[in-house]
Image (tube, rainbow, N blue to C red; front, side, top):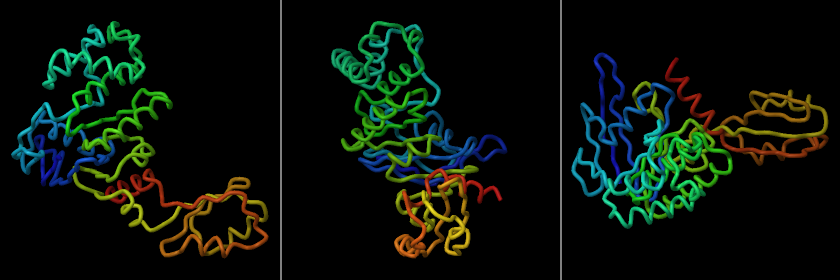
Length: 298
């Protein structure tokens, strides 16, 4: 649905984006990640047509390079773009009309989304009267109610309580399953890990990681382990098969090095070490993010 082909952008002597390429397909959630100042926001702005790349091309389905059909794309910005003195229902209907939705249909769609996001009682209230979380829900609805082919969600969970974060996760998955291509940018790595099919990590304006999340985790090779036990912890201290052991009472955290099979490790534990609970998994995306960025900075 959207393909970014070797784009670059300079601001004077500063290279903000350098030879970046990635794509998001129909029915896919692509995590667009990067630390502050990495070039992520500049990339998003080029995708949205707010600015043009100096080199390279951005292509959308059924469109030429650089041609953006604004009715086919949705955008939830990190900084809210709502009119404080507008009434909520009127504002959503207005945004829908800007995206090509007929007036009557725009008010119907706006009302449906307000009901879905538990905001019906606030339909006639001004935006300035809403909490930050409520405003985020309105901004989200404005980004997707016209059913775009591509939507860019920049920090969509900002200001939301855990209950409504789960509501958003469910809706985002539903939009993906309906065929929407979703670019998700967030610093909440746990949310990215729960939702994204693939990730693209940019740092210092350049690609650091790109590919299916499962494959990237496999590439790192290691397993993170957490073990709650009863018995003498010294048997773990002397186990040469593990790295980075951290003991905290009856809980141990460590890493199984690449090539060590988790099942083989568990079967090799001493019988006098009673396992109360064990979790062995690929390293979390948070750790991969930090390690990848740190390696570039060295």
